[in-house]
Length: 511
Image (cartoon, rainbow, N blue to C red; front, side, top):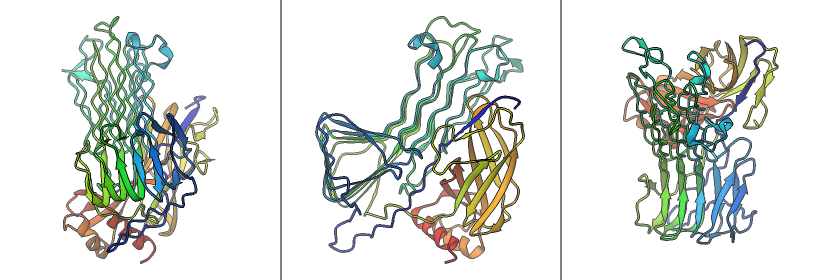
């Protein structure tokens, strides 16, 4: 580590603790719970709304006219966008929480080489892409791209040999571009020779509880002269809950949470020894619409982002699609969404109180509350490896261990296992010792614990009738669980549904 300075960035979701909204019964209309404190949202021109710390906006009514686009500035904890509406909402313009593209590289770029390889930013509530590899000498680790962020982050293909020969020394290219971020479907593979990189995985529940956005694509590999392009950002996460009618107007109305497109790679000036590759596209994000009546055939989309064009080297993979959920007592809409939506009667907006896992400090530096979202922990230049990382849990049995992974901007992931959790199930702590890579890294913690037989049987109805044996929580630097998995006795994995999360919540409270 020496004098290298480390910056640790947060990419996790903040777990919002809203009260459960009552299910509609009989003729009772759905109640969004909006206080109306933010008045009417009726912009006349394109508007960027700064999200409050909670991410929740309480409107009386929403009316976005045709030709007007509404986007959102992320808050410090990068929460999803939550729009609660007491009356009605008419979307004749555009609401957009899509991920951002990564910059183009080399001669395909804007001529400013300093931004080559920069990843795309995730939409609000979504995750960013991995950085593209820098240009340089054969063994320079910075030539390796970075993994995309998020539970389904795309992978940056590492340097490899092909038929036993070093790819560069033998003029045989044995590496590929970054793979696409996954979410509702897996990310796309990159074009590669003698390399089969992993892809971004599927995660999340169809009900979008908890609400989480899309993942970023992996970064492409750098060549001797040109940088690889970075991975694109995943689509954000959006919830619109309307007590009355939510209308997405035909033709002009749009609600978008698409993944970003990866930047192009050098189109001229590359040769057999300078094969910079492209990054992966970001996955689509999450859109959940809840209302008494859902009307209108306007566009609702959470598609994956594409890969950039390339000349030599290899392309990245396309991002997987996101998830869309429609909940209403009366759905008059007939148009399809992209991807296809799941649908149901209105359910709870959020479930609170599930078990939690949190990173509390790194090398003695406390993680801020709330985190800033960028370089949340800055370690002094004289910090030496290994460093100690501390964790705190609630609702998790003691004696279990945490797996900590550090993902650098460039190069492979580093992981370690913590000490056993000590304390009580209601409040426990553990530590891990890790050699952090030089430069900026993103930390992710994962814990898997065994549930008692009675709880496993109770959870079996959420796992196709098979007894659940273990539960896995995943959290990034801000510590909020962004993914919960149920693992059965045979090893099958199921995303925890809202009902399963409620069962776990009661168990964590001793119920």
